[in-house]
Length: 305
Length: 309
Image (tube, each protein chain N blue to C red):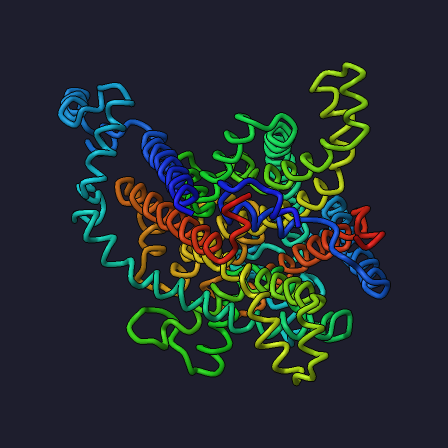
């Protein structure tokens, strides 16, 4: 187990390093940073001065190493647009996005696991087909369009939910649904497949033969085992949800990291953009690391193989 | 399960990707009929959309770019103020909505096909090499896939398009260079399964080159997997383009991208809901038909699926 964790940790560090390189290059791709800093109509001499002062005339590798060193020590620089330090700015927005991500994940699990179990129990019946069709239809709806539909129904026609903002928990209802429904089909399919496999296992037949009530067999014996891969997928999907929050937070003007990312991209605020890309990627790397270690702990076959 | 055969250091997200796309789950007789139906309905609908896109110049009642400021936001035919002159109404610039929706299908299909081709070429090459050669190549490809997966696609695409400047081809190339992960993962595990089979050993014994074995023996046999992943990725690319264009950082006006049309109509949606509903439904129908057809193909093409192993 120890060897597995060390190996997996090593991979996570390497991936994080590769991601930091890409995040750094993303900024440099944008053109000459000295010209951008100098602003419009700057004289050539000023640009040269800025280039030298900020060290943009040094080799890219040196600049990357310096940037990485500063980033690791928490010196994230200043935002070009918001004129504040990047670190505090980003960490003030992070809780909103984490809250949205977790509630969307919870929403997805709450609708997909019962439907997956139902589809597995009534395999190949009309219930199963209805669940699968719902999943295919759900995955065909673009999330930004679904978000606008929600606004139309719940804010304009029924007038029960606020259109935008992030003041109260009511502001989180529509973003949660709009973000969460999209990952639900994947969970449903996985629960269904897992349940079908588990329900054919010998110990389920034994439990049934003992005369246990069907509900007990399904929930106590089967679901518990079928749900293990769903837990692994949850960690991965949470990463996708945090990335997807860019679109949803922008629509609902929810004041989180996704909205900040959108603003930094439109205002070409590269220092902010860079750190958000890096932060979301590192969160994802940590999530998959945690999920893999948890899986290996639950299932010894993974560690030994 | 394919996932169980993979190496220990493979991150769980890669395994999930592989398991999601794995072919050959046991299918009963009734289920197979349902799959046939899925393929027929999905494929039929997709064919109709493709034909509409191809014959857009013939089917469109008006020029999709022609503005008519005297007839702005005319409602569709089912409304009281609607007219058959503009069956789906006009947008806030007076452009005929039906013509724009028809031409929009061309953009979405172009995005889906081109992105699937570019990312498919990259991902299939990586995946087949990793699966066939193994060893260090496999480790490198797995590392690249893991790195790619840890970066949020939409954010990277938005940032890149914002720096380079949005256009149809920029969106296609950026998405093509970003979306090869699933191809690589599925092709890798499919190649690993094929590698051990007799006809590959026979080709090796006959002295065929690696290139020849990969293209001549392995590729035809992993084709079903490739086609299924390509449909999934085409649908996902179309949705991503729509989202990028919706945020104003994708296809630029005046092109009639469905995502852009929804974005342009957003300000009017409270009074003229059909302005966002029409392109939204068009988008959903296209994705629905591709996914349904892909789902049907998924089981139909898998030889394991037929025998039920």
